[in-house]
Length: 320
Image 1 (cartoon, rainbow, N blue to C red):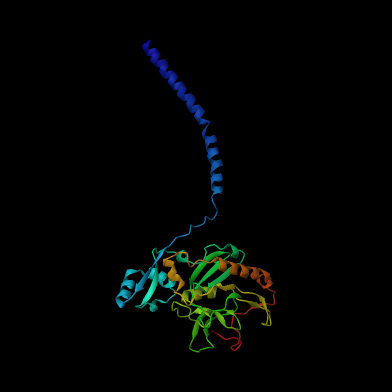
Image 2: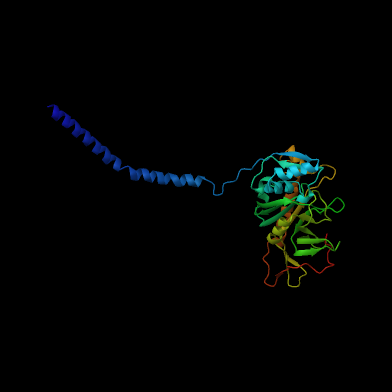
């Protein structure tokens, strides 16, 4: 009897397990389908191009008072770090000497855009294919493609007596090597004009750490080369007398305060002190409105038009 009862118990247990297995065998397809249905919903909720969170970088000042201090600086920082520091101070490396004060970032990143005074995404520029911003106040340029910042860097704009004019301008002509008509010894590599008859443009030249030009906008070599190949020139009718299509807009704004210390030194007290001000945003908004009112920014070029790739004859403009 004991054997039978134990046998019956085992048989019942096996029967129950079989039932459970049969029931569970009906579930995987349903479970899998539920998972498959839910997963796309989760994927759709994710942004197609998630925005990168801004990097908050703080700064401090370093006064280099002696030649030994210069040596210490050279040994302390890597070449990549020094490149960032020199750019933040708007100067060439050979300008480093005793008696200079530098702003130094507390964090060194691999992305120079992290140090930009311009927003990484600029909504008011989203409908403009390419835009060059030049801030005279903080001595910097920013390049945008449909509102997205792709490059920025230091500049040296016009000095107090010959300031770079502010306003909305357009890229005109360019030259790999331009000789100034003010001084024949001034060679300007990768020159890109944006004020034709005044001869004002961007180009590579010495960067002293303050506004020093005769109205042009000086750049590092790599930045001048980039803009030379990136920005668009004007398009002229077949006679070469009339502009039928504007080049890339150059928006020059802000006022440099010659009575105060360089604005980038203020980053040590306020890391966002070089960001665009409300007044500057309003000025840029006005430039954007003017851009959209000019049909030469949108009208398709006629078949008879040609792109002028060389500068006008010498004498038509004064190169600064």
